[in-house]
Length: 134
Image (cartoon, rainbow, N blue to C red; front, side):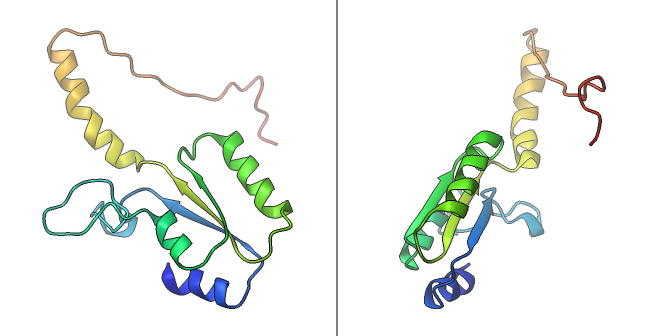
């Protein structure tokens, strides 16, 4: 992060950079990283990527805190691509890793089912009459 953003600031790059932040290190199986929201007794966490990017000198910065809000992502990208602001434009797209969300929610759902509570599990599909694949 620091070398790529620092390089873009130093060289006055006029591009758009999207940083995907799922609060975990995706390549290694969900370990905490600097931007993790969890408290960790042996590691320093809770350091937002947005603060690091600001510290590197980025002037145009947007944080989308729910990447599944497609409209908000589109608006941020459109703004980044059309602004007159010179220098790198950085969008930090943050959403919880879905695998970790499943791991976190499964015990709660299981407990609710065992307790006789009604549990709704939404399912998603494709309406073939509307989506033609083109």
